[in-house]
Image 1 (tube, rainbow, N blue to C red):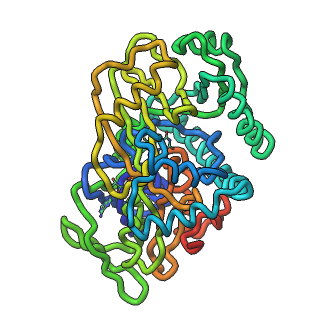
Image 2 (image 1 turned 90 degrees about the horizontal axis):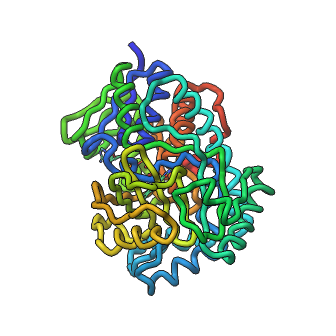
Image 3 (image 1 turned 180 degrees about the vertical axis):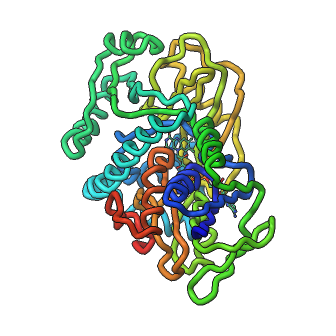
Length: 414
Ligand SMILES: Cc1cc2nc3c(=O)[nH]c(=O)nc-3n(C[C@H](O)[C@H](O)[C@H](O)COP(=O)(O)OP(=O)(O)OC[C@H]3O[C@@H](n4cnc5c(N)ncnc54)[C@H](O)[C@@H]3O)c2cc1C
């Protein structure tokens, strides 16, 4: 009989790990403490974006975080807190806010972003996953010429250092490119290679496909304790009983950090909270997935809906959805869109992004436990990075030559 692997956590990372492990011939069981894929992977913006190479650690990012202590409407917000873990994390983050770090982390991100896009393209052509896969690219739009000029520096960095190609669109061109945008905007940049999906559909379809292939998914099954002997996990104690495991993948999103002590390794993650608001698709909705850097808001047009998403709050494990944050989403996009965004919300949502201080994911073996692996820390890009993460985990378990160099992402770097 084939070796069994238990994947803990059924977000997009757990689903992808299950896919590649099943393909490699393991017997795979995925457990989740709640409903499947119902945490950070549920209602995000759906962008699969190899253009998102620059890490969060831009020069000046820490200053923005500090200023946000006094500005409740800042999309990037650090909530006043005395939590030592948060400040330890922030200190490491601040140290990395340099141009050199942007280039170095960016290069490592680009490798896994591009590899994941190749995997998605293969997956989507191979399997009939009905997830609103769209090839319209990603459109950045600007109201002011000053912001447009300032972004062109970033665009220059992307093309010069990372070879990411773009098309610059001036005001009038922008309207014919996407009639859903208002007249009078300064312009935009179009990244044609980016893709998008409706994430909750992708999760559901991918899970159904894996179930049909024999992967077992158990929901409402919370990991409560790990039983390990002599540097090897023997079983997992869960709310649904004890589960024996020959190998275990920990893909619990940001909550993976809670298992650092039991796994005897460092997993320095902080929740980076974001929100989304989904409504029925209004008339005159834009064609393209859109990013509005002036307000750091994303607009995701779906076949039957429109989603607005944004914010990066470092506020601990806070699960509230303040009304003013949801209104802020609507206010931010109104000046850019022809469509009304006043429609009733069909869903308001928050997600805790699993944030690392170096903007890189955590993928690989747990240093002191032979049969345990981490797949977490995907920051703002979990959907974009999922396939290559799953493939790496499977390659590490089988001993196959990895399709990309995993060194920058290994848990042992902390
Ligand atoms: C507003 C917003 C917009 C975003 N937009 C994008 C985007 O457009 N593109 C992109 O690439 N990324 C985007 N992201 C980021 C992306 O959503 C995350 O990086 C990704 O979902 C993380 O996936 P995950 O599987 O690691 O974690 P999660 O989806 O959080 O999954 C972890 C799972 O582990 C389970 N779990 C936790 N503890 C236990 C336990 N003890 N026992 C059993 N199960 C447990 C949870 O229930 C959960 O289902 C966005 C995030 C936000 C907040």
